[in-house]
Structure formats: structure tokens, C-alpha cells
Length: 258
Length: 191
Image (cartoon, rainbow over all chains, first blue to last red):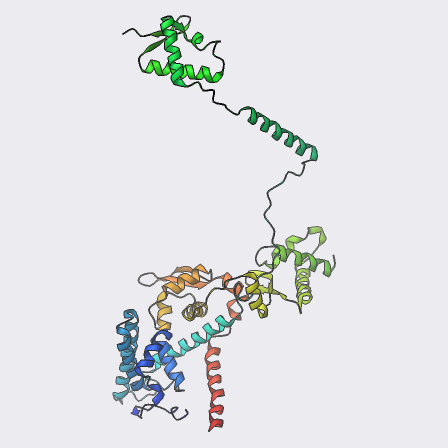
């Protein structure tokens, strides 16, 4: 196991790639889902090989990346861009490492390691991963602990002056109302509007003209009958069989001759 | 009014009130003539903390104030008992949260460049729904992107008083390095 842990790159000079850096395509397919992106993969590859984060072996990593890109082109197009960008960055860094530095800028402070920016990002990302793991492992309210609190049921406001006597009175009122409702129960008395219309026409034949009030009058036993006759009269007027006029003393209903 | 009485009344207030209670609000439990001071309240809180020591609730101060809450060592049994479905915190979600927490205010672009992945919309939406992250403004750069920051609710839910209580970001890499150092002797011993 520790055979694999050796520097893969010594200041631009390539050494044989450690076996564990290369992930077989079949395994890569499985791993695809477990990475959050190119930085995550880079982070993993470096940790897996116990490599110095400050001395990244570019060639192997880039190869691994391009392999990775080929795999995901088919499935997740969005991620490919991220991986391609990372692969391009790695190649760019490699190219600049291979290009001789202008000797004029011999001043050490001036020579910037092309890997610096990537290392910086990787370092930050690695710390963020640590912080994320820390937060995920912390006790979180609603997941690992709960606020202790007395539950106060929401009660409707109650009039405090209420007494037994008032309750009794209220009960009596309810009983009374129930009684009234019972008395109101309607019963069909079998007197239809059609019958009432026949009744009105019979009256018309009896005498050509009636005071409307008399037609609804005393001989009609119930309110229901009176209503039926009233509706019948209106219906007949609508059908142009009778005329209802208001004249001097009151409303008069007449048979129409024409 | 002696300390025990003040502590009992504050305990009652904390248990019956909804949500964490700031210290100055606790003074509202007392009439002016009872002459209870901010110092008395502080002492009473210490007294309450002592009262609950060794029991299954603890007095905790977070960003919004004081609250009695269950010990997280009992998380599992209480979760089952309360039938509570815990929020699932995925790796991308906690990474985005960590970035907002440590680098705020941040834009979507900041988050995506740190993670090296151009997707963070759904994570931000979930974090906003949880009330842990909110838009605090717009950055004065082209496109005027939203800036996100963490909320007091996040601190309350984590039981923290402020962000400074989170371990410094630099400490995390050291931990990773320390873990790696720990592995090395084990490897050596195997040979």
C-alpha cells in the first residue's frame, strides 16, 4: 500500500505514475456520482495518494481529468464544462512549468509559481469541506435537539362573568327555539297551484269580476291555500286569461273576454 | 426577592415563552418595585444552569437569547419519540452553507468558484427555506448579483451566540493534516 505513496512528479521530471492514481474506467463510472466537481475530485486524488497539496503532479492529474470528462460527456453536460475548465487549467499550469522562466526576473519575489492560484483554491476548498463536515456534525436544533417549551393551548376568550343562572337561561332559550322549530314543520296539504287555477277560473265563470281580496278570502282554510290561489291568479294573468287592475276601492280581478 | 425566587420566575418565563428570549426581555417578568436588576437576572440564569446540570435539558444562550433545550446526546431517542423528520443535510448543502457562513456576504459566483461547480441555486433555495441564509443586498459589480449571508436562526439552531464561535477556517486544514500524520506511523508499523 505504501508503495503507491511516492511523489509522482519531481520538479517537472516525470516519474512512473503510482498505480492508485489511475482509476480504472469501470470504477470511475461508479465514482462519478460521488464527486461534487473537479475541485472535489482533485482534492480526493491528492488525499488518496497522500500527495503534498503544494506539489501537485500535473500530468497524471490532467490525464485522469480528461478521462473523467470523456465519461461524463454522455451523462451530465453541465458538469463537463467545469471539469474541462479544470483540465485546461492543469494543462496551462503544466505548460508554464515547462517553459523556462525569463532569467531577467531573477528576483525570487517576482517569480510566481503557476501552481499557486490552484493550490490556493484547493486549500480553501479543502478547508470549506472541513467546515462543512464540522457544521454537519454539530448538534442542530430540529435534528439533534429540541427547545423545551410548555405548550399553551389556544383557548377562545371566555366571559368571566358567566354564571350558572345565565347558562340555565341560555338552555331554556335553546329549548324554546327548538319547540318553535318543531311547530314550523310544514305539511303538504295537497292543494296545488294547478287546482288553485281551476278554482280561480271557476270563480270567474261564477261572476265576471271579483275583488282580489275576496278571492283569497275567508273560505280558504290555510295560508298555504291562500298562497296557492295568489300564485294561480298571477299565473292566469300571465297566461292572459284574467286581468288584474287596481281601481278605486282595491284590486279587481276579471276574466278576459277576448 | 432572593435569587432562588428570581431564578424560578425566569425559568417559568423561558419555558412558557415561544423561542429564545433575550436577557433584557427577562426583566419584563418583574415589577419595578421588585427592584430586580440585570445583574440579578444574570445570576439567576447561572443558578438555572446549575439547577439543570445532570438532567436532560440544558440552558443555552444563542444569538436570539436564552432557551432550555434537550441534550443532543439523546437526539436519537427523542427524534423517534417526537416522530420528527430531521432535515437532510447533503454534502453540497453543507458546503454551500459553510461558504456562506465563513465568507459572507457571498454571491452565487463566489460560491461556485470556491466549489468549482457551477450549480448552487437549489442549495441556496433550500438554505433560504430553512431560514439559515438570506439575501442581504446586491453587490456593486456588473449584473448586481445578490449577496447572501447567514441568519440569526442559523446561529440559534446551531446553539451559537455569534459566528466567531465557529472554529476558524484555517483550523480545518490543520486537522486534516494532523489526521494524515496520524496515519503515517500506522503504515510504518505495518511494514
